[in-house]
Length: 565
Image (cartoon, rainbow, N blue to C red):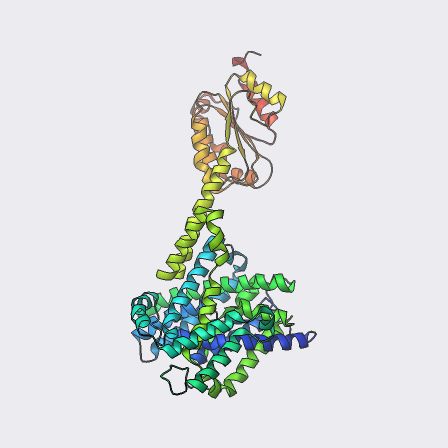
């Protein structure tokens, strides 16, 4: 099934979409400015990112009510990229390469969508998602402490932590006061009022007015003049020596943006009672990020708070996201002189609130009660996110979580593996089947498996069968196995080969389906005992049957001369 590219723009809900888009833009404006300043690319880069990702993700994306733009997690990554590349190439080439990384991340997101990976992106364990989101929250909080204290951001967690003691001992009291005032405003505005007057905008305006009226002559870092009008085109810039890092950063942006956007899509689905298209959403986000990078904008993703505000204000179709972007475009044309007076400490206060909100407080509090191992994974991912990088954190966290999950599943699968040679109560055998096992006097080994058999069960299959040595016929009961992995199937093959090599006849109970097809692919009938080959015996050593009773009956008939009935 093909993915439709451009969304149909319906005017059926135009009033709600108009109001929702305007309201989302009001919420997005202060955050876009803050993210732009925090990234090191300038406030205008945050606005361009909100405009281009917001417009094109709405036009091409798969979540009708989603509003996209720069987010905390994406800004953390691009801040690292800009700091690293600009430090190596301060002549402007480094910044151009950083915007190329944004484009590269967008191209990768488009490929994710075309490869239909959307349904798999959010399958990460919650402990991993919680760990890296909380880690990003910690990074945002740490990186905004210098601007809050009146000093420029250093661009790295370790550098910030080294400089903090000096900043704390000699703060810019005016900047600190304005930043704390901003935090007080955004935390104190009631939820009901926040829906009408977004707290970030109220805090931004109030703190800026206070700074101009009462501290106009103070030594206070401010945004300064930002360009107005349309942006200039920035063509992709590559450097072979930096290609590995650029690709790694691009993958990081693409994966994080995909996770961030699709998680927000799930939130949008729940509050708007709609169903998003994950693959189309990835394509839309990718197109938005490619164009944002082309025009010097920050990378973006689906923004949860802006999306929720949009829906609550009446947004129902992609038109609301387009309106949000157009309103911000008008701000770029006419509001430059007003935004120039905003103190950096005020933006730091806004981002501190963002970082605190990103921290997964609910899971952090409950995790130790739910699972000690899960808590350990969460804190491991958090630590790696803060001090190493996001990709390493996610890969290590997912690997550890999946290994623990496989161990649990293997234990469950192993509990359903039974080697039976005589009548026992701990079976699901019929009375007739139990009687046949009793009559065989241990010469028939019934080996039962149940449930899906993955590679984790292969070792248990081999080990359990090795405990029983003295039998003449083997009945492998796979009747209750719906699926079998390659490794488990190869373990079955080894069992069959070993049994046939010891001149034993094997019956495999397997119903039509995936398990039978996989075993037929292995061509188990090729195994023939050397003794029977020498004797020219026509009776095959391996039989595939669909009924356990039939298998036991045939096995008993084969060894009948040795059985006293």
